[in-house]
Image (cartoon, rainbow, N blue to C red; front, side, top):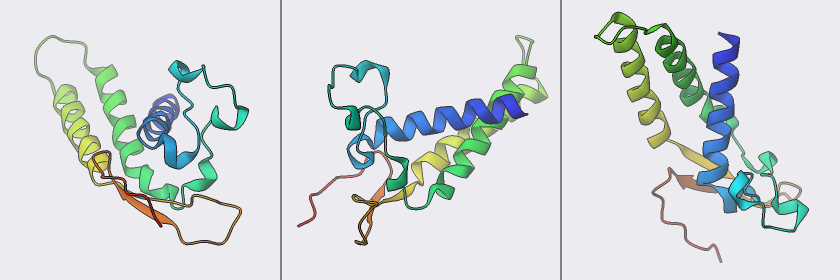
Length: 125
């Protein structure tokens, strides 16, 4: 399961870095290499206040990958049903994210909280 856990963790972190690029202070994705500032190249993961919120999505994604690798037939099997169930649970876990970001992790300010990818992002004054 280690290779599936590592792949799932990588996928979750990439998804978070793409969904919340501004909040994490960097884009991290390969398509944004045109930025010249080194500090904008990679996300600052210290800004994510509670990284445990990502755990359920990563676990479901790892199980989805593991059961998907066991599914070798074109017809429905136990593995394909488990894969589909964990895919649905992963999507629900991502939709339920209520991530908290600290815009300046070196300072002692209040953190901003954002609901999942469809959040309306307002500017704090």
